[in-house]
Image 1 (spheres, rainbow, N blue to C red):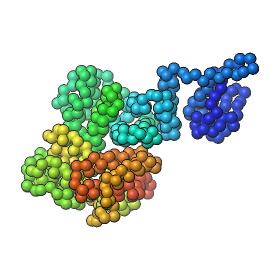
Image 2: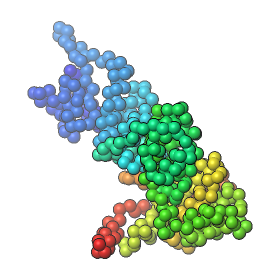
Image 3: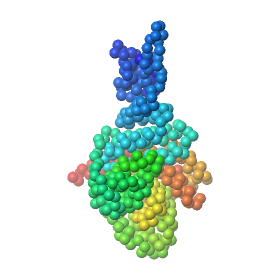
Image 4: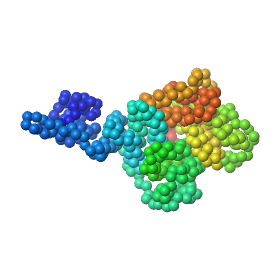
Length: 486
């Protein structure tokens, strides 16, 4: 056998390597070892390409004929799977580049990562799938730049790989039942996963499309202040992924989404938000108050919901816009010292990423409530919950002048360029930068210049500020306090 002279890891010349009597080739740069008979990587990384050799007299002939496409595709996707299971970022990038080189559909890498992961997400959807939908948007916008497109593909696949690393498969029931929206919603409310999964399987069997499930999924997501707004965001991202990747991903994505709805935290049932259901039941009992973002400035959760109820005689879109701006002002005025405090209770574990949800959830509310107007009361009151929760961690000053841009559109383009080379070590941080930037870009297209200026300024402050993630001393303090009371 002959082989390439470049190590498939980082390109070191293998002619500088060592060959054992057992025909094991060692790359002396990182000690990777290859079986020269098969090309198998004995170190567990990229395979080495080998070529059949024969002697003809004094000549040595190397067969460099390409294998049939089907064999090359199988080999590359198998290698992507290996890299996926190891959550090896660099190798995932190289293997997807090889997939592109053989002329395959690059989006197959995303389809396969869903196939390999959906049953390994114990509680259903995570930010990885939501992020994949947003990376796909940037992928399409950079059709003329193969490097940036590869960034979008690798970030998508690697984040999913991270979220399922060392996870086993968590079984889904195989039952099938007719999809009935009212029954499905009751099953979600009662946390009856077996029945809800069977209904989704039955609907797909009967030829239903995502749009047929969408009203029920949106209602289920807004039935409670679910998972700090994640549930509704995930519904919008499921739609986007299915549209981009095709019907083959619909069943795994929807089954995983249903599981996340079943396990969702219903935060309107905890004391801080318990008045939510009362305000929802009183919707329409308004005080003819005109919605203005200032009404929600530094208001508590209860007072935020009260202001929303008092404005409920106004068009939903006007209340939405005021609440959107209120949540943007919160992001603009987040008390950055909060993330350096040690002696705080668990409920005080609030940081930048919590504040971004006020905008990304708002974006999802507008999308889904515009389609299903009967859901506006839930969406608006839950936006008020975000405002009230975050308002307690803001300063009196917003410092708009420091962060605003004279050209918001140009600034948005600059921030999205930064997303594509974000430099973050945690996927959870990079995906929040991504989804917040795309949500802001979408929302400012519907605002006047002065309002758009506030959203872009808030986003700029997020990008320019330190994001403190690991709170070692705080966790130590909280743990000692907690255990002392056991």
